[in-house]
Length: 367
Image (cartoon, rainbow, N blue to C red; front, side, top):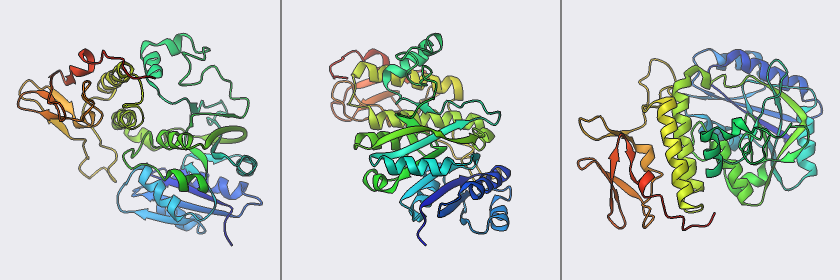
């Protein structure tokens, strides 16, 4: 029988939480023809064995390496057969009626490409799980602390939506993909997760593409789930901070470069770059490895000589020449960024291209 709902769960070393998640699915799926797919990203805590033993009806896909959240979800999504697919973190517990409510909501709203439930912490308090898109104004408000000073302001509290009480169903830019129901018809149009966002911002990118192609994304408070936030990523918190900032910069290049005011773009990129170095340090990507005995994978860094001036290669991915908007490359010998179009050169100081600050002064593009 063809399933009505395919549930896609990605797991990395959260054995007991995964067990509780799968048990809650079985207990709350009354009246739904359900298909559950678990992708295990090379866990070493016995997660895969637990699934085989305690949940034999679950489709288990075991990866030899930790391929990341986006790739593993794409594995599950391509395996899933139902016309509605629920992305579910392994640290989620389903409340009674939540699955039925999300399916009913999606069926009653044919232009909804994705709908998210109300998430609560284990103590029952609300988890603020919805955000606006991280446009340059949002980055500036967050950096200046205006969102904390004026949380009830729709302008300054825009990103975290702190002015909203989560009491009613409404369209939202981007809810967490910790629990997100997707319509296959929408996925057929926009595609799956983008692999350049392996851990973070893949859900933000997906929601951006849904909205850009005319699909709607909603929040439905009538469906509730408990979320043990960050159960996998908290195991490697420092590395995840660095990965989050890298993905944020990639997201900016993909969605905002050439589309927003040039001054606003470079201001936001500068803030994000400095923020990454302050919060997470310059090295990299440990924690994406499949076990702690493997060599940590690192994001390439480009050395600029004995002065220990470094620039992360991921930053080069989002830079463009302020004059001709062509891509740039590094001249390590001269400690400069070089435009591949007009040939203009920009110096680097303490790992920050001066172009980010001195050349971002031409607001010649409309918002």
